[in-house]
Image 1 (cartoon, rainbow, N blue to C red):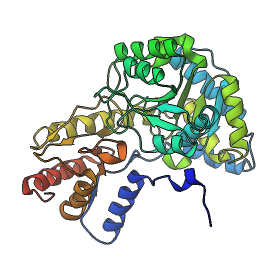
Image 2: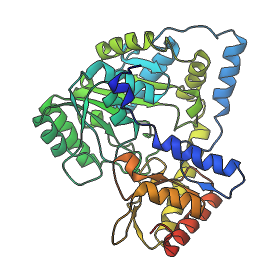
Image 3: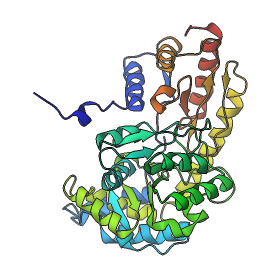
Image 4: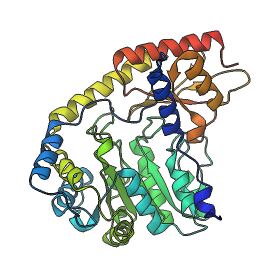
Length: 389
């Protein structure tokens, strides 16, 4: 039997693979600490749970409009209009089965076979696979930095790139483009005319002053070229509810809506009502508590890692990851390193090769203080023993 080349060439998710392996070893009775998770370790806010229960009691368990229920689309338009100083309407909004689904839908509208798409490096593991699935070609910044710059965009566009995915705060590094960098990114987008999918799923986990710098803040006139992707997963510990949002020009949304109508029909009805509660502001106490916990944990893990010999890292300004580089004379294979660290050191991490960077590992601080402390202790002991050589 012959299978489609694009589908057959897709790679599995390394983040899910290593997370599952660590969980399986722990379930088998082994002493494992895992910093693999890309999700908050807090319970979903009560307001979301109550809204879901009420929706079920009221029989809101049938199909919804493909683009999402009108109340949620309006709430998203209202909230993110304030965030970006825009006048979004429900026509600018599509609700999907998580931010990942939102990105996939929006990409399918703008990527044709052979199209070049600029991706950050390091990149979230699904970006290049999504582009490949559509027959597109992923290209990467020619600069050596961890974040896309305006000049990266100009070079890529000159070489034929039609669009890009922008991610700040970034998964896996937790780094954030400065306001000055974002201004230059916005200027380059305007100069080149490329489209942008801005993956903002970590926008509420920014540890700097004020609001995280954004392309639409730098240049509001770019709204027709920029699709904002966000959701409730990271901000409100609702990863399993699978609700994400795309906010873009109405035509982009309309075409993406047709794609969604012929794939998932609509997002889960109950999840949409749960999301409506938190987007409407009924879980702000929990949101702030989670934010403060992540900021404190960020400081804890960084303070501990600074004492570990054999790594270098930049302190993350957002998300809940830190991305150290393992320093050795010969360098490392990050997959081999992470496997050895898990099997011999009892610590689950994600290899940097999954994100396009060899020699790095990703550590999630979406974990308890005790697990973070023990995890860094195990990493330090593993490095001191040289078990990976």
